[in-house]
Image 1 (tube, one colour):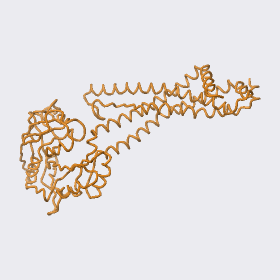
Image 2 (cartoon, one colour):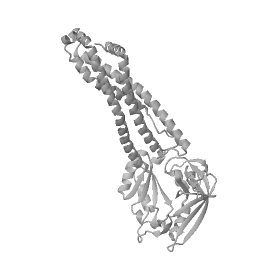
Image 3 (tube, helix red, strand yellow):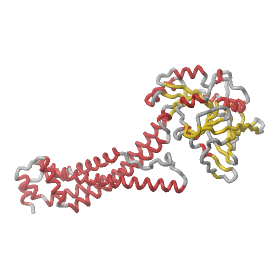
Image 4 (cartoon, helix red, strand yellow):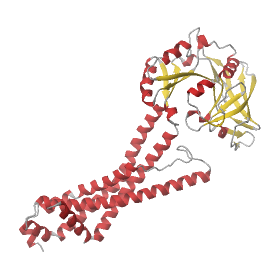
Length: 442
């Protein structure tokens, strides 16, 4: 039997039992749509989580700290959140990333740049008029910001004395301490922000130090820098010396953190392993990316399995439909065999019918699933925008339900495969019918 004759016969057989085929295919539609919607939900959440890590430049960064970071002087936090007395320190032991250690990091293969950063060792509030805010304040040089690939969307990339550059979402962190509610600030550019550093003595007395800085630039959104404030490194060092009550010797104590920039994302894993082998603590966005991918792979498998249950149920419908077809076409099958049809030909007809039902249900189910995914995404984003809560899974405009093309194709293929497998039992029954008994069947 030629392929053309086989397809024509399959079409004719399906066409004469249209109602039963439609009802059977409807079960496949539900299963295929369920698989596509649930896996699309997992894919959308994964995509949003990954996009929140930042652009490709953020993935090339490795944050390095010395293994003995616990020995670096810090401000101990007392009950109530108030910074307490200074702690840490062990003799004359080098506790940070000295120039020698920085050069060691620069020698690691795959490293493009090593940039030391300085973080405040005490509590600091940001004040803008009546509003009070918070942020991670980092000390860095202008050249180092350029080496990190930081891009300005407003203002200019400058870090002269009395200037600061802020992350894209720092403005969201201001609130009114009297009303206890967030203060709507749309833009911090050209605003003068007062940094109020607070220090407690051993007797519990508090002293303050203020620093007035003008916002000269706002960074492009994406990555860890979104909630960070960057000021000249020497200003942070002065505040840290005030916090600790002693002069910081960079030759002996070094820096408490450095950012290593890899030459490409492919070099990150190898460079990170070598840095750890040298005895440093190292983490990167690639660590989070690997964990996210692992988690969402499992999640998509679970969600896809739940949807596949509905598709599995539809398989019994296909088996039932074709089993009934055997009873109705027993004499026809016997006549085909009497005219010379082989068992393989009979099996091909029933397997083709089963696969066609699966393909039809898969095509319609993929379309229905895609439509439901888009509708669900619009409803979810609209609800979150109206509630003012934003998108908790990533950027505000990120899709919560995302349907890639490969998922549509796999759903159709999977539905067709389920139909084909479901047809094996009826096809075997039809192929093994005795021609004489089949011709006598009433």
